[in-house]
Length: 114
Length: 114
Image (cartoon, rainbow over all chains, first blue to last red; front, top):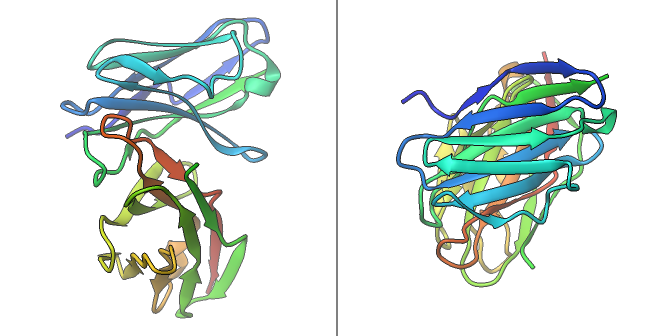
């Protein structure tokens, strides 16, 4: 199993540009999560999906952030327009249904907005 | 709501010392409990888990026991190595079936010096 695959690993963009982060969950996992990690705020849950349906997006910082999951094998997190305060590591994670199962995390995308 | 409280870091120990990282939780019902580890530049990895009271999770020399009476899940290792230097996160999974997101603690940074 290839695990959770995120792309790109690193992204440097200028303020005001659109940024799209991508995630391929583990096949058969039915829940997908997007997290943001910074030194100041730690690990923050942005949004999660069950069976491709967004369940809780209360962690999305503002309207500049949007996430989609068009099918069970792909999700995107988009920031438009990007700002320097969006610089962080963004993680995607997936899990199978059931309380005894933990997440499998991807390796993350390090986003730098200059 | 659900919450996880971890001991404040950073924690610095000498190689071969005994390690304890405290974790307590608040949750409705009977949560599953997890420890995750994050090595520098990587995503979080599941270290161990326990799904019911008095269960002991173990992996790579680390252990944690699910204590319902004290609502705790402390992480222990008898003899730490330099390679154990990482950030450790305690987490719980509770809620309704189909709404099984993890609640994470703030993380404890561990540094082992030779």
